[in-house]
Amino acid sequence: MDNIIYFDNFATTSLNEEVFDSMKNFLIYNYSNPSSLYEFSQKSRVAIEKSRENISNYINADKNELFFTSGGTEADNWAFIGMTLFKGRKNGHIILTAFEHSAILETAKFLKNRGFDVTYIFPDRDGFIDAKDVTDAIREDTFLVSVMYVNNEVGTIQDIKKICSFVKKKNPNIVFHTDAVQALSEIKIDVKDLNVDLLSVSGHKVHAPKGIGALYIKSGTEIENFIFGGSQERSRRAGTENVAGIVGFSKAIDILRDSREKNVSKRFALREYFLKILNENFSRFNINGSLENRYSGNINISFPEVDKEMLIMSMDFRGICISGGSACSSGAVEKSHVLDAMGIEEELKNSAVRISFGENNTFEEIDEFILALKEIID
Ligand SMILES: *Cc1c(COP(=O)(O)O)cnc(C)c1O
Image 1 (cartoon, rainbow, N blue to C red):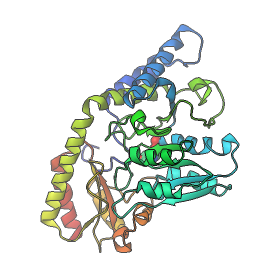
Image 2 (spheres, rainbow, N blue to C red):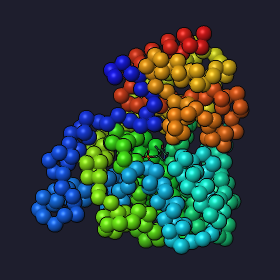
Image 3 (cartoon, helix red, strand yellow):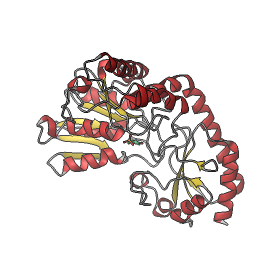
Image 4 (cartoon, helix red, strand yellow):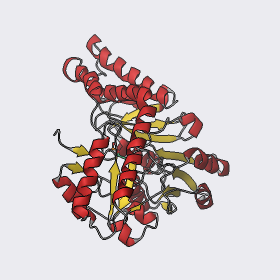
């Protein structure tokens, strides 16, 4: 698929070849079950613990605070279900934002249907959550607050440190969760500085494989387990470990440690170039969400009068991958709950597409994209 132009790095990223190499050993040769007693399994066990140490170190967590999961969705589910039903809690109040990923929104809906009160905080038109709106919603029975770090449709970055500190000031007992899945490739996450209790990450948004993620659980946080069975992950998350996935995730973090800042600059330069050429060639478009405090490679753009499904299909016909919003709605082009929550007008909402540049994209690809756009729109 050499001729594919991939502008959908928020849906997933390519597997880095170095990551793949690091994994291969644990798929083919050192394939032992880390829980077995013999020497052979030691290699898998050691690899997992080294990876845990490396990844937790990167986000400034203790290695005992990081638990591997099957991805961002499981980490998000664990945070919400582990804090509620599985803990024996039957009611109470949860606060989250109206533009969370579906992994959070659907879990909250599930809990709402089972007796929990849920308050949705709406972002402003630029895509930002006001810390005061969050604290104003806090009630006597509020026990969980969840605010995503980087929105997966418009890329806006929330001031998690500030929002969390406002919440903790009002009630230090409230557990604060953040979905940091899209933030990991952009921001140097420091869980101690943020002071969050729970934080979700995922491998495949940072050039590791799909099916591996982690939940950071601040030491002392009272959260029940979510997956039951064997005593893996210090009896907190059952199931034979995805050894290769864990090793690959750790390798991806090594690469990120060296390249994150460079990647941000590259993606930012790509976006600046795109916006420049766009402005030179088109007049009727709207960028949704603020361009400040936004993920470097993200653009969410509406071409009024242009049907977004037609636009995506026409781009696809030319081998260009862009998205109608999030990738989590079974391929169907649905109305965006994110733009909805931001109060974006109907006409703009119906024509909005998401472009997410990766650091491996090129300026030539943007030229091709603009050329295609001209053909399609004219
Ligand atoms: C991709 C994504 C998820 C889901 O992660 P998976 O590993 O695909 O399950 C959750 N939250 C956000 C913000 C995402 O972008």
